[in-house]
Length: 308
Image (cartoon, rainbow, N blue to C red):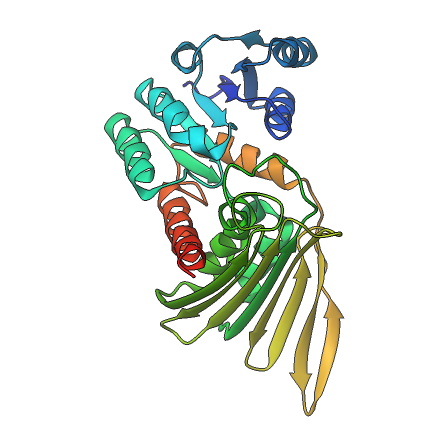
């Protein structure tokens, strides 16, 4: 790729989320949206019409025309779509979770390694401006609570709520605590689907930090909040509103400060970052290894729930 040429991008799966990947690639200066792979004829025609791109009939054909591709198909199809793209020499952004099993994760990593391709995992909260603030402010986390509640949506129910939603907070917490996991406790309940729709996990880390994560996809309201308690201060942030406050100890009092966060669209920041990583042969903020660690912990939580 020459310094000034655009990165040729593609998207496999242009449903609810994939359409936004197509929209953003088409809008980013450094990218050219070459094409899509989409099973639905009407949807494919709509996206190609909107963004002036081509429909390809297979991942292999798309790989031959692109430098970088977003994989935005249901989680249980990630591996079968990603491996041919990687073997075709494409750098990938694979939506979270990376895949549904550690065996598949190894397959994806092996294919990426074989062709020297980058795999970035779409843990979008890592690109939320809130996370940028947390990464600097969290120095000695001792207790973390995360709440992620969403109304029911049949989309995503090919996996349980842990792999669907909790994995966001698992990824964020692993990146903030930076310590091996010592113990995991979990509980979950099936409400509307065949797998858990409500789950709670308590994760204890080797450094003594404890994280308590609540997740639901059968809630009446949407919540995406995290609180981090440290010696002398604590932070409360909202991933949805991109706002928050910081309470710090002054004498015997807690003083509250609003946190100035520059709001932006996390998916746009994520794809722009991916484009830069591809262009400069850099390292993604959330590479396949962190994606795999988050998946491993999510699977452990899921198995604990199913064993009860």
